[in-house]
Length: 256
Image (tube, rainbow, N blue to C red; front, side):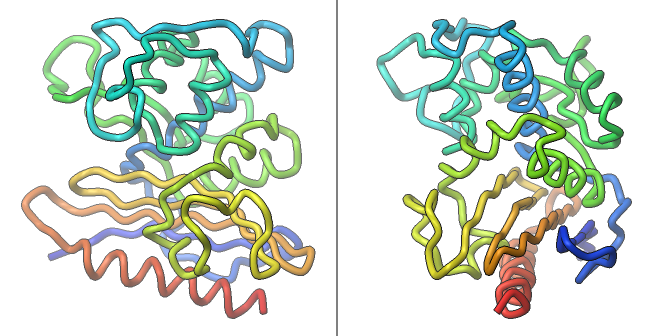
Protein backbone atom coordinates (compact mmCIF):
# COMPACT_ATOMS: atom_id res chain seq x y z
CA UNK A 1 0.00 0.00 0.00
CA UNK A 2 1.62 3.24 -1.16
CA UNK A 3 0.77 6.62 0.30
CA UNK A 4 2.23 9.65 -1.40
CA UNK A 5 2.98 12.67 0.74
CA UNK A 6 3.61 16.35 0.12
CA UNK A 7 4.73 18.04 3.32
CA UNK A 8 6.15 21.42 4.25
CA UNK A 9 6.47 22.90 7.73
CA UNK A 10 7.83 26.44 7.46
CA UNK A 11 8.38 28.91 10.30
CA UNK A 12 7.62 32.31 8.82
CA UNK A 13 10.57 33.97 10.56
CA UNK A 14 13.19 31.52 9.27
CA UNK A 15 14.49 30.78 5.77
CA UNK A 16 14.68 27.01 6.18
CA UNK A 17 11.78 24.62 6.77
CA UNK A 18 11.47 22.43 9.80
CA UNK A 19 10.23 19.58 7.62
CA UNK A 20 10.03 19.09 3.86
CA UNK A 21 8.98 15.92 2.05
CA UNK A 22 8.21 16.18 -1.64
CA UNK A 23 6.92 19.73 -1.12
CA UNK A 24 6.48 20.23 -4.88
CA UNK A 25 4.50 17.02 -5.46
CA UNK A 26 1.09 17.86 -6.90
CA UNK A 27 -1.65 15.88 -5.17
CA UNK A 28 -5.40 16.03 -4.87
CA UNK A 29 -6.33 18.27 -1.95
CA UNK A 30 -10.13 17.82 -1.68
CA UNK A 31 -11.68 20.78 0.18
CA UNK A 32 -8.41 22.64 0.78
CA UNK A 33 -8.90 24.27 -2.63
CA UNK A 34 -11.87 26.15 -1.17
CA UNK A 35 -9.30 28.55 0.33
CA UNK A 36 -8.90 30.11 -3.12
CA UNK A 37 -12.64 30.72 -3.30
CA UNK A 38 -12.60 32.43 0.09
CA UNK A 39 -9.69 34.62 -1.03
CA UNK A 40 -11.53 35.70 -4.17
CA UNK A 41 -14.75 36.47 -2.29
CA UNK A 42 -12.74 38.48 0.26
CA UNK A 43 -10.88 40.33 -2.49
CA UNK A 44 -14.16 41.36 -4.14
CA UNK A 45 -15.59 42.34 -0.78
CA UNK A 46 -12.63 44.63 -0.06
CA UNK A 47 -13.00 46.21 -3.52
CA UNK A 48 -16.72 46.77 -3.02
CA UNK A 49 -17.67 44.30 -5.77
CA UNK A 50 -19.51 41.97 -3.40
CA UNK A 51 -21.86 43.00 -0.62
CA UNK A 52 -21.31 40.63 2.33
CA UNK A 53 -24.92 41.18 3.39
CA UNK A 54 -26.30 40.21 -0.03
CA UNK A 55 -28.44 37.08 0.01
CA UNK A 56 -27.56 34.03 -2.04
CA UNK A 57 -29.84 31.03 -2.42
CA UNK A 58 -28.84 27.56 -3.48
CA UNK A 59 -30.27 26.14 -6.69
CA UNK A 60 -31.05 22.54 -7.52
CA UNK A 61 -27.81 22.20 -9.52
CA UNK A 62 -25.82 23.33 -6.46
CA UNK A 63 -27.22 20.71 -4.12
CA UNK A 64 -24.80 18.22 -2.59
CA UNK A 65 -24.82 16.20 0.60
CA UNK A 66 -22.10 15.38 3.11
CA UNK A 67 -19.71 18.09 4.32
CA UNK A 68 -21.52 20.97 5.93
CA UNK A 69 -24.81 21.95 7.48
CA UNK A 70 -26.74 23.99 4.95
CA UNK A 71 -28.04 20.92 3.10
CA UNK A 72 -29.94 19.84 6.24
CA UNK A 73 -31.25 23.30 7.17
CA UNK A 74 -34.67 24.68 6.26
CA UNK A 75 -33.15 28.05 5.34
CA UNK A 76 -32.83 28.28 1.56
CA UNK A 77 -30.83 31.55 1.40
CA UNK A 78 -27.97 33.04 3.40
CA UNK A 79 -25.86 36.17 3.35
CA UNK A 80 -22.57 35.94 1.48
CA UNK A 81 -20.81 36.41 4.82
CA UNK A 82 -22.66 33.53 6.47
CA UNK A 83 -21.91 31.30 3.48
CA UNK A 84 -18.21 32.08 3.91
CA UNK A 85 -18.47 31.33 7.61
CA UNK A 86 -20.06 27.95 6.84
CA UNK A 87 -17.24 27.10 4.43
CA UNK A 88 -14.68 28.06 7.06
CA UNK A 89 -16.39 26.31 9.95
CA UNK A 90 -17.58 23.03 8.43
CA UNK A 91 -16.24 23.10 4.85
CA UNK A 92 -19.85 23.45 3.72
CA UNK A 93 -20.21 21.99 0.23
CA UNK A 94 -23.53 23.63 -0.57
CA UNK A 95 -22.26 27.06 0.50
CA UNK A 96 -19.15 26.43 -1.60
CA UNK A 97 -21.24 25.71 -4.68
CA UNK A 98 -23.49 28.74 -4.19
CA UNK A 99 -20.48 31.03 -3.77
CA UNK A 100 -18.66 29.46 -6.69
CA UNK A 101 -21.68 30.02 -8.93
CA UNK A 102 -21.47 33.73 -8.05
CA UNK A 103 -17.70 33.97 -8.53
CA UNK A 104 -16.84 31.42 -11.22
CA UNK A 105 -13.94 29.00 -11.55
CA UNK A 106 -11.87 31.01 -14.07
CA UNK A 107 -11.27 33.98 -11.71
CA UNK A 108 -9.79 31.56 -9.17
CA UNK A 109 -7.25 30.38 -11.72
CA UNK A 110 -6.46 34.03 -12.49
CA UNK A 111 -5.99 34.76 -8.80
CA UNK A 112 -3.65 31.78 -8.43
CA UNK A 113 -1.64 32.94 -11.45
CA UNK A 114 -1.42 36.53 -10.19
CA UNK A 115 0.04 35.43 -6.87
CA UNK A 116 2.18 32.54 -8.19
CA UNK A 117 0.10 29.98 -6.30
CA UNK A 118 0.09 27.29 -8.99
CA UNK A 119 -0.36 24.35 -8.81
CA UNK A 120 -2.91 25.27 -6.11
CA UNK A 121 -6.31 25.19 -7.83
CA UNK A 122 -10.03 24.76 -7.25
CA UNK A 123 -11.14 23.09 -10.46
CA UNK A 124 -14.86 22.52 -10.17
CA UNK A 125 -17.91 22.69 -7.94
CA UNK A 126 -18.49 19.93 -5.42
CA UNK A 127 -20.43 17.02 -6.91
CA UNK A 128 -22.11 13.99 -5.34
CA UNK A 129 -20.98 11.98 -8.39
CA UNK A 130 -17.90 12.97 -10.37
CA UNK A 131 -17.57 11.62 -13.91
CA UNK A 132 -14.75 13.41 -15.75
CA UNK A 133 -16.01 11.91 -19.01
CA UNK A 134 -18.90 14.36 -18.80
CA UNK A 135 -18.37 17.83 -20.35
CA UNK A 136 -17.19 20.44 -17.87
CA UNK A 137 -16.53 17.96 -15.06
CA UNK A 138 -13.00 18.05 -13.64
CA UNK A 139 -11.36 14.83 -12.51
CA UNK A 140 -10.98 16.17 -8.98
CA UNK A 141 -12.23 19.07 -6.87
CA UNK A 142 -8.85 20.63 -6.18
CA UNK A 143 -5.13 20.02 -6.29
CA UNK A 144 -1.96 21.57 -4.98
CA UNK A 145 1.49 21.05 -3.55
CA UNK A 146 2.59 21.64 0.01
CA UNK A 147 4.83 24.49 -1.15
CA UNK A 148 1.97 26.25 -2.97
CA UNK A 149 -0.35 25.81 0.00
CA UNK A 150 2.20 27.24 2.40
CA UNK A 151 2.62 30.18 0.04
CA UNK A 152 -1.13 30.81 0.22
CA UNK A 153 -0.91 30.71 4.02
CA UNK A 154 2.04 33.11 4.08
CA UNK A 155 0.51 35.61 1.66
CA UNK A 156 -2.77 35.57 3.59
CA UNK A 157 -1.09 35.88 6.97
CA UNK A 158 1.06 38.78 5.76
CA UNK A 159 -1.86 40.57 4.10
CA UNK A 160 -0.75 40.33 0.48
CA UNK A 161 -3.92 38.35 0.00
CA UNK A 162 -6.97 39.39 2.05
CA UNK A 163 -6.79 38.27 5.66
CA UNK A 164 -10.56 37.80 6.00
CA UNK A 165 -10.40 34.07 5.17
CA UNK A 166 -8.37 33.52 8.33
CA UNK A 167 -11.33 34.79 10.40
CA UNK A 168 -13.61 32.28 8.68
CA UNK A 169 -11.14 29.41 8.94
CA UNK A 170 -10.61 30.11 12.64
CA UNK A 171 -14.14 28.73 13.08
CA UNK A 172 -13.04 25.36 11.67
CA UNK A 173 -14.21 22.29 13.56
CA UNK A 174 -11.99 19.61 12.01
CA UNK A 175 -8.98 19.02 14.25
CA UNK A 176 -8.67 15.35 13.28
CA UNK A 177 -5.36 15.59 11.46
CA UNK A 178 -2.20 17.66 12.12
CA UNK A 179 -4.16 19.99 14.38
CA UNK A 180 -5.20 17.08 16.60
CA UNK A 181 -1.82 17.26 18.31
CA UNK A 182 -2.51 20.68 19.84
CA UNK A 183 -5.20 19.52 22.26
CA UNK A 184 -7.59 22.38 21.48
CA UNK A 185 -11.37 22.46 21.74
CA UNK A 186 -12.51 21.61 18.19
CA UNK A 187 -15.67 23.71 18.60
CA UNK A 188 -14.10 26.80 20.17
CA UNK A 189 -10.52 27.77 19.41
CA UNK A 190 -10.82 31.15 17.72
CA UNK A 191 -8.98 32.66 20.67
CA UNK A 192 -5.55 31.61 21.96
CA UNK A 193 -5.52 28.53 24.20
CA UNK A 194 -2.42 27.19 25.94
CA UNK A 195 -0.72 30.24 24.50
CA UNK A 196 -1.35 28.87 21.02
CA UNK A 197 -3.53 30.17 18.19
CA UNK A 198 -4.50 27.86 15.34
CA UNK A 199 -6.14 28.57 11.99
CA UNK A 200 -6.48 25.57 9.67
CA UNK A 201 -8.34 24.06 6.72
CA UNK A 202 -8.68 20.37 6.02
CA UNK A 203 -9.63 18.31 3.00
CA UNK A 204 -11.01 14.80 3.01
CA UNK A 205 -12.27 12.30 0.52
CA UNK A 206 -11.95 8.55 0.07
CA UNK A 207 -8.30 8.75 -0.99
CA UNK A 208 -7.12 12.07 0.47
CA UNK A 209 -6.28 13.56 3.83
CA UNK A 210 -4.97 17.14 3.81
CA UNK A 211 -4.46 19.74 6.53
CA UNK A 212 -2.95 23.20 6.15
CA UNK A 213 -2.64 25.79 8.88
CA UNK A 214 -0.95 28.57 10.77
CA UNK A 215 0.15 27.95 14.36
CA UNK A 216 1.23 30.94 16.45
CA UNK A 217 2.88 30.79 19.87
CA UNK A 218 5.26 33.13 21.71
CA UNK A 219 4.95 35.57 18.80
CA UNK A 220 6.19 33.00 16.26
CA UNK A 221 4.05 31.66 13.44
CA UNK A 222 4.59 28.37 11.66
CA UNK A 223 2.82 27.51 8.41
CA UNK A 224 2.25 23.86 7.62
CA UNK A 225 0.79 21.88 4.75
CA UNK A 226 0.50 18.10 5.01
CA UNK A 227 -1.19 16.23 2.17
CA UNK A 228 -1.50 12.46 1.78
CA UNK A 229 -3.01 10.59 -1.15
CA UNK A 230 -3.43 6.96 -2.17
CA UNK A 231 -5.14 4.83 -4.77
CA UNK A 232 -8.80 3.75 -4.57
CA UNK A 233 -9.38 0.44 -2.83
CA UNK A 234 -6.73 1.02 -0.18
CA UNK A 235 -7.53 2.25 3.32
CA UNK A 236 -4.37 3.51 5.05
CA UNK A 237 -6.25 6.13 7.06
CA UNK A 238 -5.16 4.99 10.51
CA UNK A 239 -1.48 5.21 9.64
CA UNK A 240 -1.94 8.47 7.71
CA UNK A 241 -3.78 10.17 10.58
CA UNK A 242 -1.23 8.88 13.08
CA UNK A 243 1.61 10.38 11.08
CA UNK A 244 -0.22 13.66 10.60
CA UNK A 245 -0.73 14.01 14.35
CA UNK A 246 2.94 13.15 14.90
CA UNK A 247 3.90 16.03 12.60
CA UNK A 248 1.59 18.28 14.63
CA UNK A 249 3.21 17.03 17.83
CA UNK A 250 6.66 17.90 16.48
CA UNK A 251 5.47 21.43 15.63
CA UNK A 252 4.01 21.81 19.12
CA UNK A 253 7.20 20.59 20.79
CA UNK A 254 9.41 22.86 18.72
CA UNK A 255 7.30 25.93 19.42
CA UNK A 256 7.73 25.19 23.12
